[in-house]
Image 1: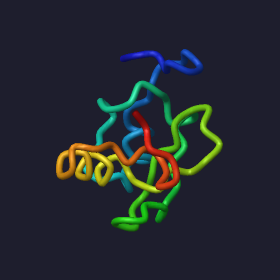
Image 2: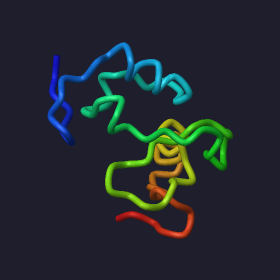
Image 3: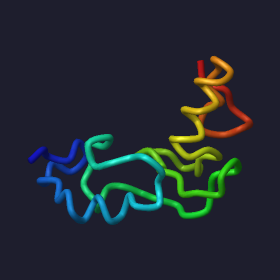
Length: 89
């Protein structure tokens, strides 16, 4: 059992798994935050219409879910960033 990197409470893997359910192919092991600190926005991915994970401290909802972002990086070799307007380096 790991502590949340944000609030340091023990991560309840069952609760976090349920909250992350809308994200394709991701599991509790892909996150180091508890369910209270994870922010999931349903139907926000512009590519697949799936849910996106909003990183802690970000005020903008990402355009791509982690799976679609990863697919784009694998296919093109370029990271589209969290939003289409900004390209990360």
